[in-house]
Length: 356
Ligand code: COI
Image (cartoon, rainbow, N blue to C red; front, top):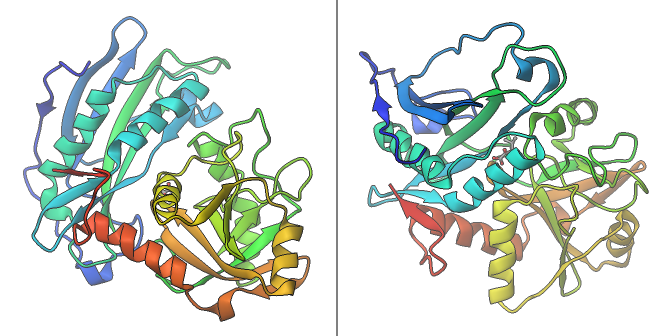
């Protein structure tokens, strides 16, 4: 319950922090974590902060067997003036509860989730890096914690939040990535879990991503699971492209994640009075546009990936170089605007940032 007092236990000895310039993605963790338990009879109870450390789990814990769990990912940024800002935490709270609904997990009080972010980031605020391109990644997670081997929704859950100071998600940084369009594996179908931020979607992506990596690609672009022709998403980010004067991104039709950066970019593009379409687009339309010279830019959007230019797409043995393999002007403008708002160097007229 949001009214419950948060019990705080601090570490006796703080860890040594990595240098901003050495930060990778998701390898370092801060001193503390936030936890809340759920039991059928009690609801969500005992919100607390504890020293970061291993969880003791019974080997029969439900999430380990049937994957009933979810996660989120958002970031805290340190501005030049030292101010720490969270980017659109309310959108992440809402999505967490939408995923919970899909996964038969009891919803959390949005106020408590927000408090878990602000309390933990405040306690570990010295861990928020300051170099541009770095941030403190916040990973809220819920697992079915009941030790039980039957297949049904669990009666016990654990919500926890951990923090990780991070640099760029892709080793390329802001440099254009190479992506393989996949028509041999599928990620999601309508009626499935595709729009939920749950581990099953990421497990389903691993084999294709490994195959693509061995061929020199950074990621895969998924096509729809039925026709294998409509463009979906990149698994670690949503995808957008500019063909002529139209900016196109696949619609939210149940199979792709409703990205927070996707939503922010669409809002900016509409404010800039550009022509934006959330519509189905086939891979053949994209390839055709590349052939006729109207494909101008392709980029991905995501919390971890931020705005990531796509320099090359491979499909059925053909390599399509986008914008000469460089960063397009619109991609750069979107990156500069989003990053500017996150670090507090660009005005935030939408009130997207929350100061900690
Ligand atoms: C994010 O962008 O926050 C994600 O969760 C993508 C990936 C790191 C799993």
